[in-house]
Image 1 (cartoon, rainbow, N blue to C red):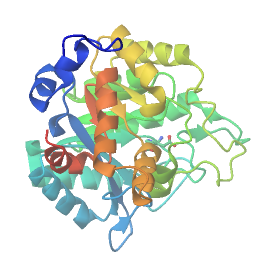
Image 2 (tube, rainbow, N blue to C red):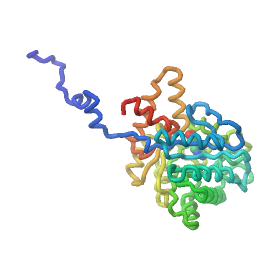
Image 3 (cartoon, helix red, strand yellow):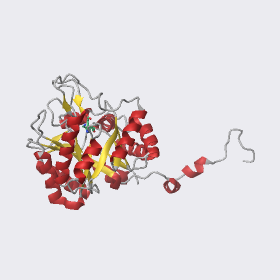
Image 4 (cartoon, rainbow, N blue to C red):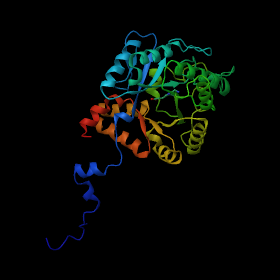
Length: 336
Ligand code: PBG
């Protein structure tokens, strides 16, 4: 053709998109199971492991199935975990951490350094009212000081049991400093703190709360939600202040949670604060893909991979996801 069509454009950007070779060579974002963390639920007082609605492949594990699950995950390239221990007795104070401590100890006895174990530190699974801290007598406010003292005790017990990393998700002020001080005073300087520093007051935590038996809405407290301690979805500055403060108090890793609705926050914060960043693809985000896929509305595996890619592109170093244990299989299937 000698004369070109008036609308014809020279190939410019599409030259770099034309085949898988050049697309792979130019890709800036990479996914690897090595940078993924699998959440685990260890549940006291259940006889068999139980599925969790919306979280395909994640279970409420018994003491025994927990260890089998980790063994199978190791075989699938996943060695980093975030454990939530769910006790069967709830109280309002004088909490008993024996169940969690026993699980941490069992994991470490069996797998030692092959497993990197972060443990969630929070009170919502332990309190009768489901709040992340201790309530005042009128039951209309979460007390910051007393909660922080108890959280630091919990963190110390978990670190002494062998946890590699302490992950406080409660959102009390000053808990990172209190935890760091407690750890350092007991020769546990090497234990990391991953702070849920930009944790929003989100509607995407539903499947998790069912699994961890930790909803604040059905308890006896007068406050029925976590708005007075988690960050308001419309407030970027609070997330910035909270993350800067936690970094100054000694957090080693910071986190944005949830991921997808807060990608802008992740991008801006990871640019502004030079620490490793985790993103938590929370239960509701994961379940949304699973539900859409079950209804033939979305292609399951590529959709999960696309979301994980978005977290990385926005600046996450590591991804906490219920799909971690499938990552190796899915990435291989998608031609990674
Ligand atoms: C506990 C906690 C929550 C999650 C992690 N730790 C729920 C909440 O704050 O109510 C949510 C994780 C998920 O939805 O996957 N404070």
